[in-house]
Length: 366
Figure 1 (spheres, rainbow, N blue to C red):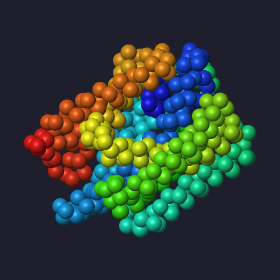
Figure 2: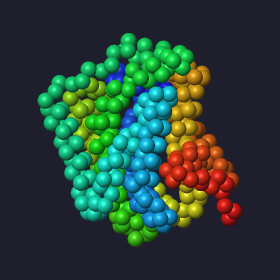
Figure 3: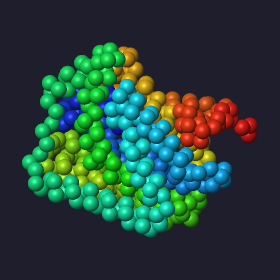
Figure 4: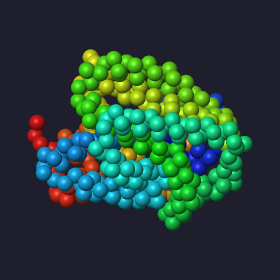
């Protein structure tokens, strides 16, 4: 829902409104995505990345393998996949960020859970304070020109060399965003996930019902209010000092809303329809890397010159509909795939490289 906006329009995220789509429905869709999705879901992936480190530690211990070399190979694999992904399909890749920040996580993997939580909260507070101070000292940031967005659109409609050239031209801005916005929040989520993994918090969520309820209350009040502030600034006042201020607000509020989403899913999984919820969502979750890259590939075929070259030609409502339909197909496809296979195809390759072995290809019979 977030990445597809950048793939579908060269205007998205530039502070310049696409002149082709400015109607009420278009604005409503932009608002909904900004409030409920932007800057929220990468935090969930980052949390799970930190949590999974504890599972990989346990796996290495069971197999008698040294953990550090395994994890370093995994980070290298993610980084290489991310570089190819960023250059060929989508410059806003986050796998390279994981590959780099994972080195910090590895260095801190023996940290105590309480210390990890303190470090995460401190990192978020310092980052938010930095944005707030910056907002007080600048008048604003110059947005990308309309001519620049039009030029990028034409480049993305061209051949492979033109598309890759457009991606490379976007990379400096993307790297700036990753380093100063996504990276601190992702690292904080890594540390929170590591702390939760130490306590095996997701192994028995019934023990944490009260915590889950409080996460929902905070997330759907404070977190949602922060999402509204962020959307109003980014859509209504792009490039202004107020937008910089709103980014600081979002650094604090987005983790709360992301936590509320996670708490809601965990409570649904334990509820009356839990079996159905897990059956619908778990297969796609087990193939997250394959589905992430698959989404970029399909969208590249739809929007760039690799395929239909529809960049800038589909309204935000149509783009959102494509995102929902694509995920529904991937959820169904993941379920079918995992009936016969032990891992998703990219997960299988990454696991083979990580463990320097040949993982099972076929799923075990029930």
